[in-house]
Image (cartoon, rainbow, N blue to C red):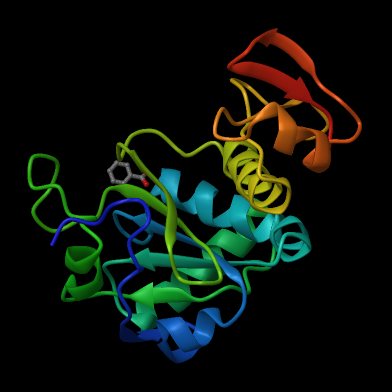
Length: 208
Ligand code: BEZ
């Protein structure tokens, strides 16, 4: 099965570092940042796990639960977390899925045989509270992810849902947003009484 944007994120039951979870139940009414790693006790992964832990308050402020995945056991994950905490100067509290048999990595297409038959690549899934997949990104094993971008895209998705707007290139919170072409000027007067700047009939910028 190929996963696409808008699909329901497949459910699963699995052991994690904070106990067994049913994914959908665990996610509840939160957004989820689900991200995979090639293996425990590897350098790039250690920095990414640490960064996620350091940003715990930022994820909570956005109603986002991080969920890591690596293809090792709970015991190995727990030992690794000690290293993450020590070297990255943090306390990792979110769960890490123990996907030793690659069941979840397979379900979420995190194994790319051209890279490795056994280790997951660096996949990111942002999943909304209705369990729909809203963003998918894949990074190679050699490049750590950009967490500023991960928080930015969560902000953009949440703002888009709230105000029915789209975000321009390199948008960041506070910047102007785009009124989608599907919204007529008539309707835009109701939705955006603050007005807008019309660069082209299809390119209208407003502030929300
Ligand atoms: C790392 O996390 O450092 C890593 C893992 C697998 C391959 C290369 C780097």
